[in-house]
Image (cartoon, rainbow, N blue to C red; front, side, top):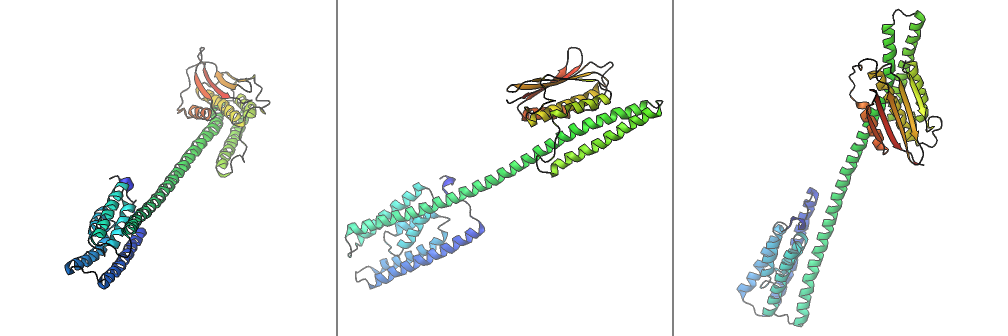
Length: 391
């Protein structure tokens, strides 16, 4: 038979409760059987002594056998039902066995035991008819009693199955909640990694440029060296401040700390120019001067594109000219690209891992955009980002 029809595994406390129930049912079956014994003793109907003793012994063994009703419900139900064809005192135990089969076994096995019980009780009534009531009434009571027992057992089985299903659903919901929490934590770590890479990578690249200028310009006037040192100090201070802001995002509620957006792109370009990178901004969409129509998420993603593009230019093609172009219109899409001219010499060797472009790609996918990058026809490099621009 199918395992699905069996009662789910019980806990230790439930198992103890089950044994208490078993003992109670054995006592009840014994009490009802004892009442039957007393009625037989006082009944003047002549019955062979050996048959009467066999009836009593069968009833006693049937009550004791109920202790194993959960382990062998079907076998015990069939045996006790057959025994009730000649033993009146075993009838209470047979009813308990029928109830157990209805609770723990399949509907098919329950129907088999119920049919055997009906046939055995009917056979007993044929051999020793009840004189106090008409046969039709007796058979009706027998049939309704068996059906009521089966219905009760099936209802108990359905309730237990429902409880088990609810427990499984609760366990599945707990696992699902845990997985959602882990997924959210992973996304938060990835977002933090992107923010730290974008912010600190840009700021540290500026530090590298100015520090390199100090290293290779030792013969420069003291005023120029002091000015370059001041730029290094200022950018180091800004890098520390940016780091504090990124860490503050972890501690503060969402949206409490301001994050850079598309309106901060001109400031970003001014910093690049001060670092010696010639940058031209062509804002054909007007979003850097009036970003009210561009959603905040898209604006922040455009800012990170320009930031990463300028950082990569300083790493791989220092000193080359850069064009930042922004086009688009509301209701369609906004496109931003950072294009640098071919370097004068061989590309600078760096140990970059490409994490910045991967982070940009992830940002673009989160808002339904697309990122592409590659060399230009003239030998330079282009990074282009397309984002939806709701009207």
